[in-house]
Image (cartoon, rainbow, N blue to C red; front, top):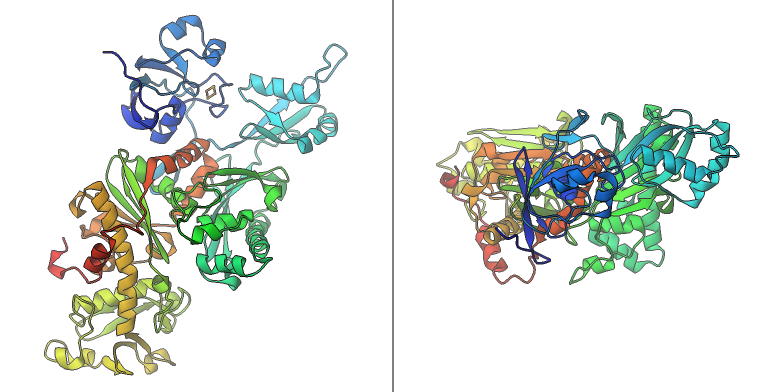
Amino acid sequence: MEPTVAAKAEKVKVTFLPRETTTRVPAGTTLFHAAAWTGQPIESTCGGRGTCGKCRVQIVEGAAPVTPADLQHLGQEDIDCGWRLSCQTEVRFEMVVQVPRLLTTPKTAMFGVGRQVLLDPNVHKVHLRLAEPTLHDQRSDYQRIKDALREEGFAMTASLPVLRTLPKTLREAEFDVTVVLCGDSLIAVEAGDTTNECYGVAFDVGTTTLVGTLMDLNNGEARAVGSTLNAQAIHGGDVLSRISYTMGKKEGLEELQHLATFTLNGIIERLVGESGVPTSRVYEITVAGNLTMMHLLLGIDPEPISVTPFASAAAHGLDLRACDLGIAIHPEGRVYLFPAIGAYVGGDIVAGLLATAVPRGNRLRLFVDVGTNGEITLGHEQRSVATAAPAGPAFEGAEISCGMRATTGAIEGVQITDDAVGLQTIDDAPPVGLCGSGLVDVVAQLYKRGLMDATGRMRSAEEIAHAVPASLAARLITVDGVRAFVLATAQETGGRPVVFTQKDVRQLQFAKGSIASGIKVLMKVMGVGPADLHEVLLAGAFGSYIHPDAARIIGLVPAVPLDRIRAVGNAAGEGAKIALLSYREREAAEAMPSRVEYIELSGREDFNDIFMGVLGFPPLDSLP
Ligand code: FES
């Protein structure tokens, strides 16, 4: 059969043997990258730069022209038998490729949602015993290192600050050194063998909280974890108020940029202090955050993100010098920022998708990060779509009469039995108010117990007097003409009673209606229903604490069997760790924006109807 050439935007099928993993990649993608996307390991030390000659594969079906790198690294006989360097071979036709077994058993670690990740960081340390210069060998220091690295299969370039260090370091160390490569950039030359000291920090940069994990890049172990509130919070709790701050004050952007690096550096300082790892041995950080946070960290004006058509200054993945951002790790260390899929589906979501592998799996899964913005992705290997649904601050406890952040005394769980109300509070402290998960719980419970109808209308004590015990009915009161439910009396709190009002129900309905509409639109685009969903993953600081059953009862997530709803914790932070420990996985993150279609909700003609249709709660007997 004649192979057909794929048009530029067309996806081409590649099958890797012997595992028989299949993927479709945009024409022009290298086999090496296609393999990284499927998680198929291929031997390499140069990271796909065509210099190590280790990534050979055999083309079983399909055609691949011979490249200069093939001629350099492979014998003619092998080339005639279809062997090629996978990092140089572009996929143009449908292909079947045989991948040799790895020569060594690679180190792996478990991260994200049960993901086995190959430990293959972007940072490499190589111990070199270099020949000292002689009158017969007058190669420069730079060339001496470059030649030695080539023999080890690494390519190299060096910047001026590193070149400046070479004469002294090499001679003082008698040419026994360890070189540090970040990708193919030489970032340091250290005396002696320091290969066992190689660290990086993975960051989840949230609008509210930042979490950093110091990782040992040799074995993938976390050495220390630290988190802190985002110092930018003094200028607004959400992304829009931070953007407004930059618009309203001349030095606003500079100030927020400074606060971003200040917060990151504070965590780094704590991590190295706790672990005893010197800052000079921390060579790279990875940063997963929403696009506004990334713009602020970079000192780029975020204003265009906030106004239609929401076109940002930069949404691609970035590899930068830490010192250019004022990040205090090794002076020549690097910072990797995840790419974004859309203005409101940022690098934090790309990192979450890396951790859960939603767009790379073969089963249909729904990923929902619930917060002021609900970021949603639905898909599998064949097709994935994503959107952002503005939910407002209700899930963070704001604009709820007794709402509060998830701190000590916040009610995080509610159980209404026939005649009692059971409250679960953070730190088991007396109840102070309601945080997001408690909010979802209380609405689900009121609805389940018949204290509220499917439209969200709270019933009065008289209406249900015949159906529930008097002690429960007595909790239904009226405050300033508005119906309310007493969650905790003044006696129980030792202070102000915690009361949940009809207005609060409406706030929650709008927030959940927005996210549920986003989910519904994506399901419509994909042409699937709840029964097709293999799993629903709830991510993020808030999503992970919602009780899956409550989320289902209020219709926040589709009506799927309970065992298909799973909280996946801080998926963005896990994704940041994965990208730090495996450059191949980082390649997969880089491919996300081209693999996941962004669906814009505003301006969709069907949105209002869908939104109105999901404001209420699904019939209780409809839940599987
Ligand atoms: S990965 Fe292809 S030559 Fe190194």
